[in-house]
Structure formats: structure tokens, C-alpha cells
Image (cartoon, rainbow, N blue to C red; front, side):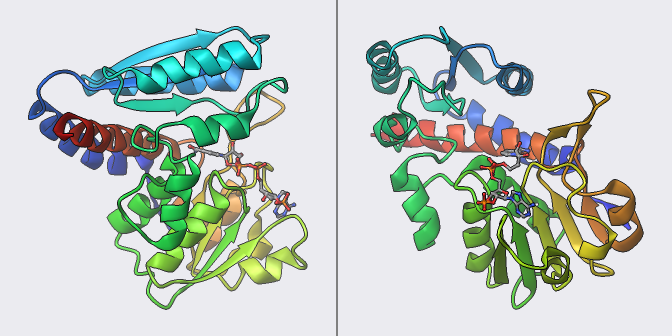
Length: 280
Ligand code: NAP
């Protein structure tokens, strides 16, 4: 079994982003819009700030109060959206219950939507149109497979999870590479048998250890995307590590896998977004 480490893939992407960002006049700026102080958001934010600073990309955090009204949130969001000095926007979700997340997804400028939440960008992912921004984690899974030179044409890919954030877009991107894709969810019957068909298994559920020895076909490629915290406060994925290490030919674990690549893809998206905005 070979470990597919996110840091190796991210490094390659980051080197190119750093070099190409230098060619642009002026700094590249990402706005992070965060409502409240959820520990998950703060931890993601720290990661983005650190990794973007290392690439000399600017990050501006708009921290809004957890009890903000929809009207005030909308006004703040539209100001960021229209700011010509902001090239990309990352909105942390889920938003608190009093806010309309659908409104934000429709309102975000598709050209600044570096994490692919706008219906315009999602439609492009589904249409196989590469001019949009795919959700970064879905794109990151594809970067990892490409980096490891995993052939996808005609292979069986099984994705566990069907959210718009990761399961559905990664399924479409795999289909775009001519894999035969099966998408599983909470109502899938006999999940282990379906997963065992996979040459490439992508787990994006959010249930620690859901994928075990009876889900992994010998020599499968296993990409864990799930993020869970165990009872000891440690970060863990959806895939049982021991099972993957025993059966898989290539395994991307959590932690140590797709997370770093997700941020690297976001940096590349920011570069693309800035290039377009500076030209237009
Ligand atoms: P989500 O919206 O809660 O979706 C979870 C999906 O898993 C749903 O489609 C659900 O099915 C399915 N599911 C739930 N229980 C299942 C079961 N027992 N068997 C099979 N499928 C089951 O979560 P998400 O936003 O897609 O995120 C998924 C995981 O990826 C989370 O752990 C999240 O933290 C992680 N994530 C990581 C990154 C990263 O950068 N590393 C980025 C985004 C997300 P139904 O549709 O039937 O409910």
C-alpha cells in the first residue's frame, strides 16, 4: 500500500501558483466571510490564512456576529461581492438558521466564487464546462488522482455521499474522466457490496470508520474526504485506517490527505479569478 499524501500534491500546485501570482500586478485578495465563531470554521480559517500567507496571497476575514439579521448579512455580503479589490470569496457554511444560504449561493458573483457554490458554477461542473470553479474539495480529489497517475477511463468509481459540496460534484468530475460512477447515500442497500466494486472509492460522508475491511476491494484506490473528531478529540476520516492500509493499493488518509490540496486548489482558483478580473 502506498500513502497518497496531500502535502506532496499541494506542494506541486502551490509552486505554480506562487510563480504565476508574481506575474500579476498587485496582490491577490481572498475574502473569507464568516458568521459567528464555530470551531470548525475557525480551524479551517487558520489553515487558509497560514497556507495563503506562505504563498503571499492576501486574506481578509469578514467576521460577522452569529445573530446578524438577513438584511445586515445581505448588505455586508453584497459589499464584499462588489469590492473591486477582492478577487475571490469563501463563505463558511452552514450559515446560522436565521440566514438564507440559498440567497447567498445565488448572490455570490460567479467570477469570485472560488469554492464553487454558485448555481452557475455548479451547472458548469455538471455540464463538463471547465470555465467555472468546481467546489475545491471535489477538484482536490481529482488533483490527487491525477498526481498519482490513477487511470480513470472505464474504471469503476464509487462515491459515498451525494451532497452538492462534494459527493455530487466529484461524481461528475469522475464521469468527465470517463469512469463508470456509482453514487451511494444513506438509503443505499448493501453498501459494502457496492463499495467492493470500486477500483476508486471516494468516501465523503462524515461518519468515522463507516468504510471498513468489507467495503474495500483488494488493490482499490481509496480517497478519504470525511472529517470527524473522535472521542479523544482527534481528527479522523470515514475510512478505517487499518482496513485501508491492509487492502488498498493507494490510500489518501484523514488527516494528511485532501485537506491541504483543497486549500491549494482554492489558491489556484483565486489566481484564475484575479487574472480574469484584472483583464476585464
Ligand atoms: P453532508 O452534506 O452531511 O452529506 C453527507 C452525505 O453522506 C449525504 O449524501 C448522506 O446521504 C451520506 N450518508 C450519510 N450516512 C450515510 C451512510 N450510513 N451510508 C452512506 N451514505 C451516508 O456532508 P458533506 O458536506 O458532503 O461532507 C461530507 C464529509 O466530507 C464531512 O465529514 C465533511 O466534513 C467532509 N468535507 C471535507 C472537506 C475537506 O476539505 N477535506 C471539504 C468538505 C467536506 P443522504 O444524502 O441520503 O442524506
